Image 1: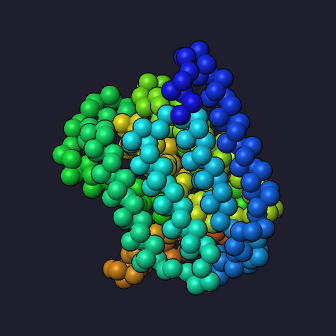
Image 2: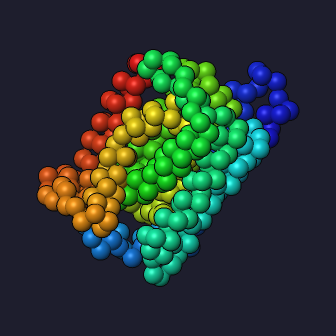
Length: 319
């Protein structure tokens, strides 16, 4: 909003102020309001899941709303971006209402809600950006039929929401990996000179996540809940598609995808096809390394982050 009244020379200063605003307001709001958030009931099947019982959860409600406010004040919110903000809030609210519920909404209801949001995101992406896909490593541009691109976009958004949600189970892990993934996407946009206006929203989003991580580092004082993880997964998918190279998601979000995705594949194959795989691997993967390999929470966060940073660095070298 402010950017509409500024000269180009003022963008840097206002951009800095916006990022600082997003981080500081998130920190203040979480510090002041964390005791008003719903309480976690613990995770029955997660390794050390009982340790989270009683902690405030649903912090995503706060940092997502701060992100939206920061975008409205400091960002350039056109019609496309406005739709993405609405969808991000919708993803957050479906998660937050589940965080507040005494009985979980269940996988089916949440999966269907995620599907509705994914379809709306895909339609918006095709409508405003077309259906061309760039192969980042070769520069080749492939124009897909809109329905094909839309179907792939739905799968990407739905998958990203759910793998990011599944990866949220260790203090600081999901937020740290999200920050690395989004900053990698920001650097890709900068290097490829695409989606300039959208790229600033990534910095604001990262600032809000960092404000949350201040309180979520081991031992955590509060949890993001589904309100945060679902919205983060949606925003990552949208950002990946805005690069014009959506298949880069497979690399820039590799650790999130593997950590949360293995469990989704394992459960889906068992439930629908009665096929058992990876029977000796606990899922999500962060539970396996803590339970079976004896990694501490801090080791899990650092080692997973190191793996993603190395992959991201390799991607940035090539694109």
